[in-house]
Length: 335
Picture (spheres, rainbow, N blue to C red):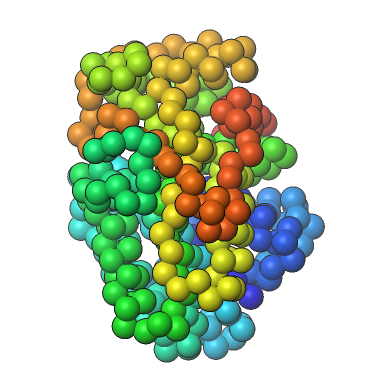
């Protein structure tokens, strides 16, 4: 049985589908701070199977102990965290509390119940501004935002834990830029309030919910002056967690792996491709650079292929088609 923290969120809900489709039993804990229980209902609809849900925070040690006492948890997939780069700059203490303190509580409870298998949701934000591209796992670490620092500190805590006790099996997955939605259109990215990531803002502009897309920075040293990222389909990302679980079951020790396509795409290229794929014209405006945005960031994903036979299968067009299918089918998200 797998405990999935933050399982009602964007990446968590898509990973639940893949886990359940692989006949895994799952228990979900989520505080619904930036998610909704409706996503879990849609997961049940997609898979035709049930799951167990606890509404609560992973910083609540008593609740975690109740879950571990009641369910035969073997492994944990840890998504629960605050994730906005920009918000972390303005609210650093909240990010350190949610992403670091609560993770320590989770690990303490796991150790108490001798549950020593964990997949940790990390981020390419740990690398900071690239020294070289594509970025492999040996790339220098240099997070430039509180969000990136919380992910890196989380990695360091886990690495120290692995040194202290060789029974731990830990896979730390550094995501690049997940976008898209499940092809059914039943689950997708539905941020509460104003979107802080590019794709949900873009699709909300396309649906008419927002007036104009702001593109931050047009003077970067890139193909068209806009930031370059490695966009990965959320379903490919979710499947990476299934492969990581298989790796853990082989007593893998500590592993750090990038999850990305290895294909760079600029913001303007993404906008142009979205228009071509969907036929939707996007009004946009160029804005000054944002604090904390790296110029160019894309993965060398070779290690994930070598270590756990994982690679992406879905194209940028698939990502944009599925994101638009979700948004047009659900103009107000899950509401």
